[in-house]
Length: 201
Image (cartoon, rainbow, N blue to C red):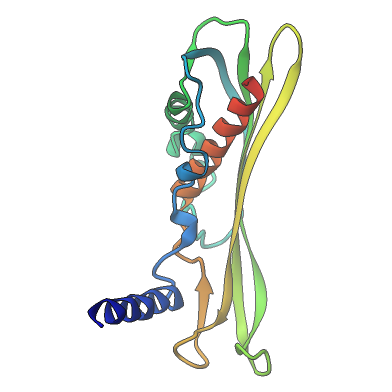
C-alpha cells in the first residue's frame, strides 16, 4: 500500500513539473544511448579545429542563449574542449600528427522566434498570440585520409511550443522553456563523436 501511494505521489509531482515547464527532457544526457561504444585500444587522430562559425541569433529576447551577436559562441560553449572530452571517452586521442585527420569545418548556432496563435487544449477557443522560440546547433566536419574523405555531421533542433496550461484554464505556457543550450550542444557533440567512431571503425 505504501509503495502504491509513493508511485501515485511521484506521478502527480511529475505531471505538475511537466505542466509548469519546470523540467525539460532536452536537458537529459544522451551518453547512455552509445554507452561503451569505444575502441578497445587507443586510436590516434589529428584534429584540425578552424571552423566557420555561423551565428544567427535573431530573437529580440533570446531564450536559449541570452547573448549578443558579438560573443564568440564556440569559445563561450567550449566546443573544442567538449570535443576532446567526448572523443576521449571513445578511446580516441587527438594528436599533433597523424595520417588520419578530423577537421571541424562548420558550427551553426541559431535562435529565432515566430508568432503563433494559441488555442485551448480542445482547440475550440482562441486564447491569444504568443512567441514560439526555435533553437538549432549543428556541427559539420570531415575525416580525411590518403584513401578518402567522408563528411560527418550532427544537429540538434528544439522549439518552445506555446499552449494552454494543463492545470490553469486560459493561461498560456510554453513546452520546453527550460531547455538548456549547454546540454543540447553537449549532446550534439556526443552524437558527433559517435558518428565519427562509427566511420573510423
